[in-house]
Length: 116
Image 1 (cartoon, rainbow, N blue to C red):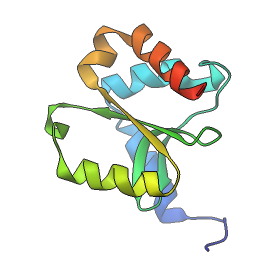
Image 2 (cartoon, rainbow, N blue to C red):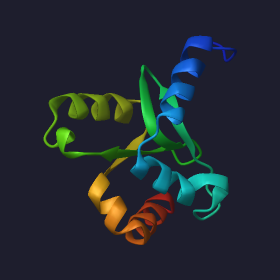
Image 3 (cartoon, one colour):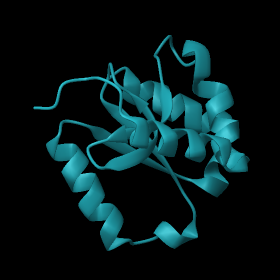
């Protein structure tokens, strides 16, 4: 098992992803940051295994992925989700248009998942 410590390559990639966030990622982040959702701490664009996840609450091992139409019925996403689940994570996929049109409903659903 790898010890924690500086990981310059992963840090650089995470920063790049945060700098180039989409409109919907920024919207969701405004609701998740600073423990705004039920007091749960989230981080964004976090390396987990060899993937970068959009948002993760480490305490509850809950990953939130925002998806556009290109992710519909994606075999790659199914393999990724299966691998992350093997590591003990629950993965919630939220469609971009759902987050844009119903952010409060999405936050309520996430809060319900966090409390499970």
